[in-house]
Image (cartoon, rainbow, N blue to C red; front, side, top):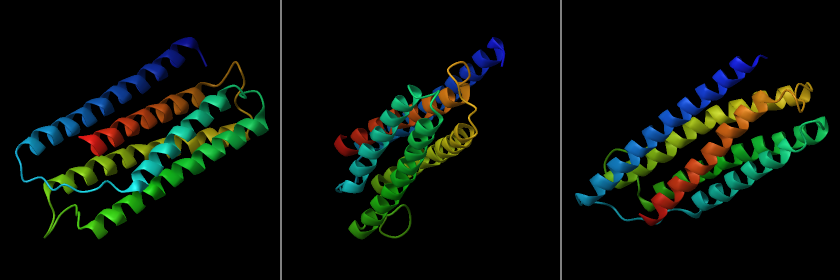
Length: 182
């Protein structure tokens, strides 16, 4: 792949990340403004969201380690596969968190819902939708790793997927602390 195409793909990723940052900046800003207006339901953020935070941070660390094994096919396959499994586990923890919120009486819409709960669901679901894209990127990266397509001279796909995954992890850490302490 030529250098111009590599730079273009990296630029496109950063433009996409910038758009996602703007989207979540808008959501969290709206959250702050709406919370200040009052009629805000206070509830306990389920521990499942903490578990998902630890999971996604650990998965990101695994991708950092995987980069150092780029020329060792079996090692990179194991590390990317484990990262993918942790990403799925993150999603499972999110669903469990939502189930616990429902038990607490925190709903997205309908009778008994409150804008505080609706914001929580919209923010976490929006992140999960973006995470789905990351899971697909990890799956493609895993397939390419199994096929032995990555070398120390050719790992752009791995790098792009990793950068997006790291971004999703950082975004989730921000969202978790925002929702937990704001």
